[in-house]
Image (cartoon, rainbow, N blue to C red; front, side, top):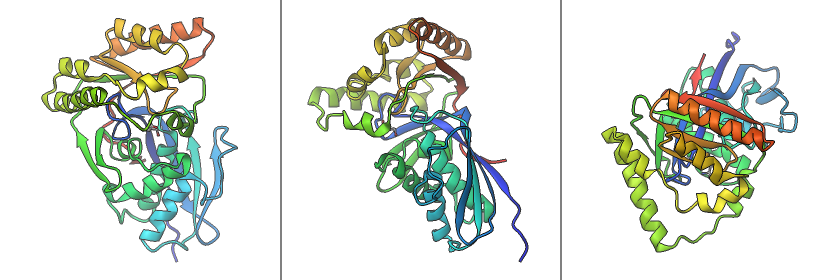
Length: 312
Ligand code: HSE
């Protein structure tokens, strides 16, 4: 039997929730993300030989690893469970950061296997497999990081259970400033503090904002987007997990951010901006404030990544 040539895949970091869509909205950015080198292994089934960049604590057992679980699920679906395959995982973003780290691994795992075997499944068909992988990380089944990392762009999930995902238009010129303060928040902990009740007034405001946000993308109307990016349900509950959250928000908005909120479960924060200059100014202002308060941070400036996961 001829050896199948090795390949590499990249799955990008993502901003989930996007202020008004808890568990149902997300977008992908360029830059940080996870890479996986996929090659033919030496023993039947999937092995993970290496996880690079200091992630020694992540399990190499494929059954406990987000990329591994996603990949095993794809292998089973395409009838290749016993084929020898090996992963080398290269994580290029911080863990427990709110940047979709576990989702990027899961997407790269599913995508890597699919590419290795010559693409038997479409990207959309890979979604449930990647979701299964991400579920290992926080126990919940939601695609708001996985869908944009896989498919690219801004994605809306009508139903996580039914994998009903809609890719929304990304207005040209829209920039994201993503700030990662050097603190860790586990997604499971950040979900645990949320009330399972929403009062009717907040429900009305949040659904109005969500609908208007989606409309603003179709209308390419950034003024409407600016009015819509207000989370009255989740952000007020999670803000206390992030030191100086409301000072940071004021800095972002005074530097012309269209909106500012928590990226995913935090601690990362994001601003959407009209152009790269505004995004850079937001990043500089926030980084300087965090430094004055003895918190190191990393700032990423990016357009919306419309492509999502790729083989390279
Ligand atoms: N929607 C998720 C949350 C994203 O906010 O908990 C993080 O996995």
